Length: 106
Image 1: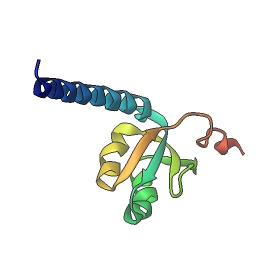
Image 2 (image 1 turned 45 degrees about the vertical axis):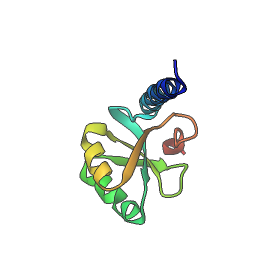
Image 3 (image 1 turned 180 degrees about the vertical axis):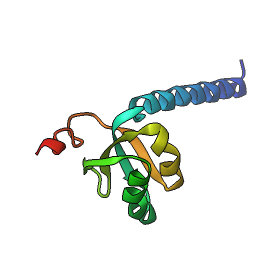
């Protein structure tokens, strides 16, 4: 095999590995269908829209999140995902430990 063939093969393998890594990362970090999730605004405008968007789509605040401006919320992914994406707000799975897990009972 030529050096050029090895280079192409290596590039294809790297792309496949990157695709698998992204898919695994998305599965691990994807918010649940319903329940607690972390909302992280990406811009100042998104931060201003976060609470009104949450309330308008049936969510409720549980606690402040671990990232400045973020919130741990309770809601339905189906109702929040598209509006959050349009507003530059990222949604993540929230583990019970460390991300407002016991904040509601304090």
